[in-house]
Length: 75
Image (cartoon, rainbow, N blue to C red; front, side, top):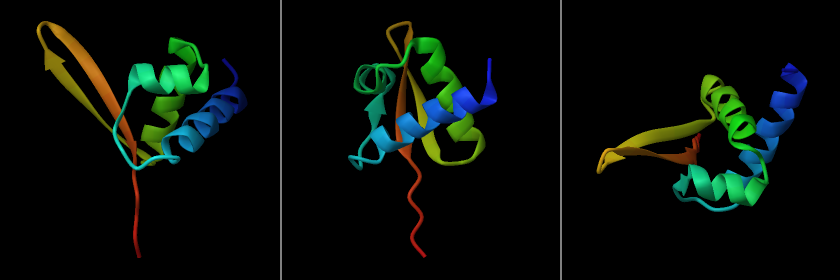
């Protein structure tokens, strides 16, 4: 997988998440960006490594849900 391509996906995800200051589900981001599950996972990893997003895993009824949100710094 090409790092430049992952960076492009990360940009798409970042732009999508930054349109609204709220928590997004993985599925919402996937629908909004049109990225595959694998592409979105790579983009989330990139953004998490750069500390640009927050994410949490919520376990309910034997399944896990991921919510994503941009990190906003004021100062």
